[in-house]
Length: 301
Length: 330
Image 1 (cartoon, rainbow over the protein chains, first blue to last red):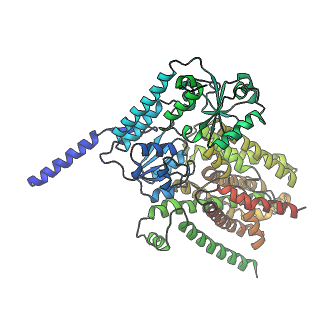
Image 2: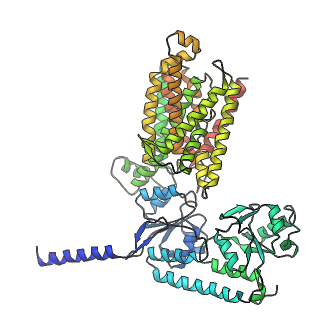
Image 3: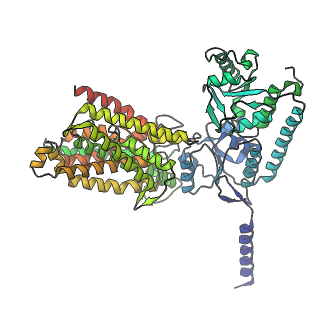
């Protein structure tokens, strides 16, 4: 073997070793992914919150496919649609030749398995149970897309925003009882395993549905009357929807006697931001904290 | 025209339709593909779209075809078995029972494989057989099946199984897409393994049914007459029940509940080629394959960015047909 050949061989061996010793990141199904030396160039996102985080990490240009629900940031709307959350089109995804597919809980496991069978790299992330779980999610996504630094910066910013809310709430008097309801679904509310429960708690409120060990559940009108919340938060997409929902609570739903309805403390929370486990939750936290404790945020109650 | 030439014509027409259906299934989907690219793939020249053609569209088309064939053959057998043209794996409750078994096995984490039967397939078979036996016992009086009691028992048993299935799905956290899959059927996630699961049962079922087709013709004369003509009625009946349930259970365990295929197709085939089971079974299977192939094609192309559960299509065609049949018999 020539000297040059030896050198090449050594170089190749060194590359192999450095590759093997490279860092890995685990997705939420426990599969290891190597932290890439080269960031992925063609990413398909299978959930709106993932799309948001990818854009926030500066991967917007590398995102080639999104779901039809991915509407934030607005640039996401220009990307190719690969179907919905529960019905992603395998064919559309395959045709984009992605080098990374990021799936989220809510995507059917079958779809994930089928994509893997098509030899695609599918990184699966789970939804968090608390706001703090967002940091790990962003960190993992940063690692697998080769943007660890951007992820650290984003997390730092979000931590700062959350910390500011905590600081403002230090002078809060009491904890109002809160009922959160999703517009258009009857009394569909978040139980204690949902991150929205954690958001209410961190915003200085008491979730009256905390006794339910589920993410989402139907609440009965009887219990709502009995619990008599001080504040009702309605997740709605627009002020019109909110007005409709508020009128329904006081009217057809027969809940006019609830303290929140009587006292006019029924508030709109932007459903689009609140329903996505992504960076906009810090803003939602601030908004909800200010609604529950206006005195702490320099607003008149 | 003799029955024989008619049968030949029908088979030829179905084969042509099947070819057209496969071609259409290979060419349509959310990703734009040209005839030229398909030709490249078919001639083994690979190409950019080979994965889409082979692992997505062809798998899906084949799975819908073999599931359709299995369901339709099960329907043809059940109609002969109950001497009643309204029997079908869905209406008799077999499909709902099989679905309950499959979902129950999933919920209990029953993920074993026994001699080629997956735990899920086995549970689907057992529950399907349980439901059909119940319907059999309740709806027969001294060997006579009354139409009303057959239909009502089947519907009631099916509703009960569906309710239990919904209950099991409700207990699991992320069950929306699973509920849609098990209760309405879908081929969206078809893979080769599933095709491989159905084919052996379809082949065995078809061979078994064909072997016993003469006896089924005798059964049409009534059990006593058949017995007198040398047909071992009890054993033949048991064999047919097992074959039909096996076919329906296998189909359900890979595609969820898809109703009415086994009702419409054997009926239409009987109108075209007559009631002789020696040709009815095979032609029904072929027709069922074609029918479900086109139903799935429709299910995935009616709406632009999304697809319908295929059971919605078969029910939309099947339910009016069912009402028409019911009205005819009054």
